Length: 141
Image (cartoon, rainbow, N blue to C red; front, side):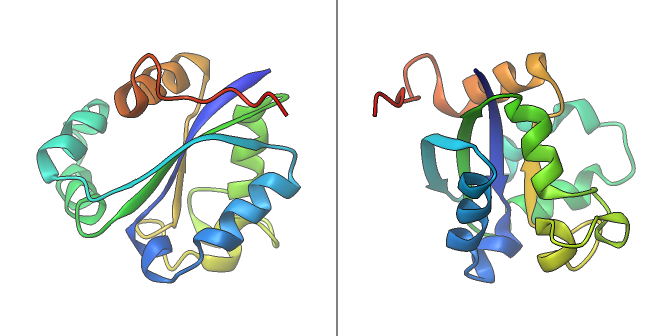
């Protein structure tokens, strides 16, 4: 069993497609084991995306991610990281496979509806960032 972080970004929340996105994760074999809606201040977004601090898109990314509420979740399942990334589709919706979240809902590479962890170490760090040591509820049924 593997866990990954998922964020429905401000454009996904604004489009009112939270339920549709969660339905796709669940239909794809993933279970939601933590979920929290929040409006992140720019400082907190900056901490989360610190790895990109030197990249030219960093300021725009921080502005976008702090522009409205997001839904932060932990997804669990077999190969959850790869499965989540498959369900999301390529970062650039123009390159995303038909039927993926980004192909169906994203407006651009910048406003691409969802975020997902890219590896086990990143997933552990990102989950800890938002949910700490005891913010995940194991599924017992």
